[in-house]
View 1 (cartoon, rainbow, N blue to C red):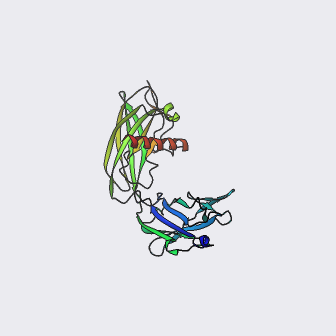
View 2 (tube, rainbow, N blue to C red):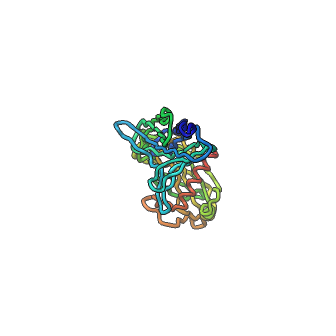
View 3 (cartoon, rainbow, N blue to C red):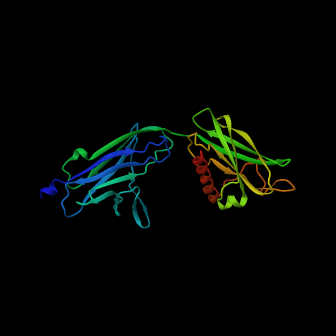
Length: 296
């Protein structure tokens, strides 16, 4: 009886991953849950919830579970959820009395705010209520900056190809931005198969792109016969914080070089404006950006 009456549930060591401190990106919340003085027999359930409060009365209680055809499932890691209500809990015993929990959290991308994140626990028997609540604060900044490739145009003259890449700065906090642009050359078959490029041209910088405007930069490449795809990569060293890093690379249409000059597989629209890439191509391009940043 004494052992049961001295059981104490607690939460401790809360932290939130600050990263670059930008809204719209994952900032996981980590904390420890446990129960002290557990008897050698039986299991004892500890419930918890996670609340996030901002300024001007804004607040939210994080969902601890998602639901599909098979029932409720934890949103984070290290705990269980009720199949009836989706509440978070952990069943502890004398040999398992401590657990680290990690919860994903993506602050609203449309707001800058200072948040207070708190975790509170409860159990049927709990002798010390002073360790039932922990909290941590973090300031998150709204981000709107984005760079995009507006167009890629390929021409040839006297055995030399000119690849004109037009970069747009449609939105952002600054009135103007400098943008680095890298260009990689793929054989078309290698690009489709996910193989590395045959050539990577020297990175160039476009200075002073005004917000809402676009600017071109041109690369030259000694022509080889065959089918090729040129991939432009913006900000390859990740110097500019953007709301969307996934649109920083874009491929040209396939261009065939031969005795009759360059031939494009499809008619380029609006002076080289390109349609959206397929899902497979998009996944390949994400890998391209990651490869460039590792090399840097």
